[in-house]
Structures are given as C-alpha cells and as structure tokens.
Length: 173
Image (cartoon, rainbow, N blue to C red; front, side, top):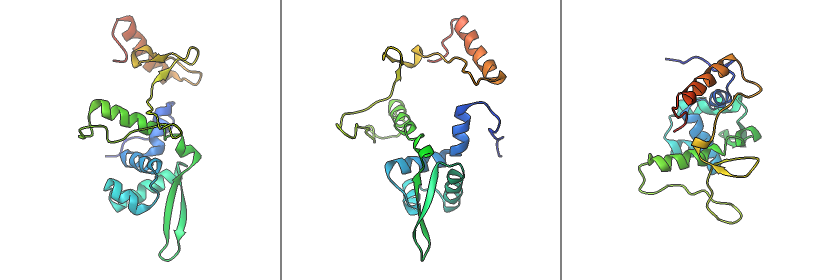
C-alpha cells in the first residue's frame, strides 16, 4: 500500500524524509557518508535488492542529494557522491548511531561505530546547545515553539503540546 505524499506539508522533517525516500535511501546515504561510492559496494553493505537499489539511487539523485559520475565506459559503470545538499544530512548519521547505541538496538556487545574529531581524534557526541549561553541541554530542557513559517496544522500540533504542558504532562521524556 502506497502512502500519501508529503507534498504541501509545512514540515521540514517530512520534507527531508520525502527527499530520502525510505530506510534504504537512508542506508545509501549512510554508506556515502562512510565513503562507499559504487553500486556493488552499496549492495554488499546493505543486502538491498538490485531493483530497490536502482530505484533509490534514482530517487536520491532526482531529489538532489547525490550525483552520479561515470567511471567506466565498457561496461558502463557509475559511482555516486553526496551533493552539498546531501552533505546536509550527514550529521544525522552519528546522532542515529548514538541513539541506537543508547537503546542497544544493534545487537553488538559494544557500539560498532565511533565518531571522532578528524583533527584531534577526540570522541564526539551530540547535544542541544543554548545558542545564547552555550549551555548544554538535555531533551527535557528543549521546548518546541511556533516558527515564522508555521501554518495552521503546525499551530494545531503545537497546541497539543501546550495543553499537555499545562496539564503537567511531559511533552518530551
């Protein structure tokens, strides 16, 4: 069953999800961030079928997240790379990996990936930062407020969060 399109939805999260397409698109982007670039590498990394991989590569290219470059003529073969727009999604990868580690969903006995500062080798992590004070915040410290591009549906969603806060229920665990 095909789900409805996100077109016209005033939501940056839905827009990014539409550009990525699905879980396979996200895994292809993961592989590109990790340095893979060729069709067979994507197949080996994820186990995705040929039909699905072809479809997702075309989708990511159409949405401007990746570009294709021929590296061999006979037989014709291509490699893929992230565009500037595609690199904007790269910070999501360590965040998803670190959340997965916290939830212990990989089945590994320890985190399978380590993200480090390229220059210093120091471990890195993600967090919310108060842009005025530089204070590190946890998820409970962060509220979601209406932005200048909010439409009626966004305001409706946020009204539920306000109601829950007013009733004393936590909005974010």
